Image (tube, rainbow, N blue to C red; front, side):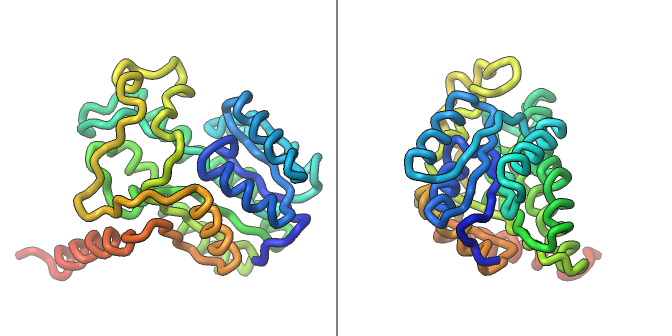
Length: 275
C-alpha cells in the first residue's frame, strides 16, 4: 500500500513516543490523523503541535481496554474524514518488573487490558471497515519481547507474544480472503519513550514498587541488542513496512541475533521426541 496525501491514519497511544513519531512522519506525507490516547492533556498538546505544522489532525480521548471507546473512535474518525486507511494499535504499558510468580492479578489485568485487548478491540472496530473498502493496512505494535523474552518482565512478554500471534493470524486471513488489506507487527528494541512511566495512568494509581522504579528497566537477555533507536527512525521503518507490506518489522540493529538464538533452541529441542 502506497502512503499518499489525503489518506487517514488512526493511531492509539498517539500522544507520545512511537505513536507521535509516526504521526509526525505521516503528516509530512499529507496523511490526515486521528490520534487516540488516554491522557487528554498530552493528546491536546500533540494535536496542537501537529496542527501547527499544517497537518489535519484530531484527538479522541480513548481507553483502549474499552470496546465502546474504540467504536466511538471509529465513528469520530469517519465523521471527521469519511474514511480510514491505516490503523495503528500502538498503545502499551509495562508493570514493575520482577519474578513472574510475584506478578499480581492487578498487574495481569492492567497490562493485558491495554497491550492485548487494545489490539483486539482495534481489530474488531476497524478491520471490517478496511475489508469492506478493499484497502488499508493494520499496524500492531508488539516488541522484541514478543519474539524473545525479557527476564523479569513476564506479563509484558506474554501480551507481546500474543500480539505477534494475532497479527500473524490476521495477516494470513486477510491474504487468504483476498481483502487487499495488509498487516504488520512492529517489534522494537530499546526506544526512548515514556512506557516505563506508564503506571501514571494505571487504574488506582502506581503501586509503591512502580512509583520508586518508574524509569528503571529490566535487564534484557544477554544476546539482546543494547543500542537505542530514535522514535523518528522507528517511524520511518514503519512507513517502509506498510508500503512493502512486510508482516514482521524488528526495528533495532541486532534483532536478528535475538530471534536466531531463540529459534535455534526451539529447533534443537524439538528435532526429535525424547526417548
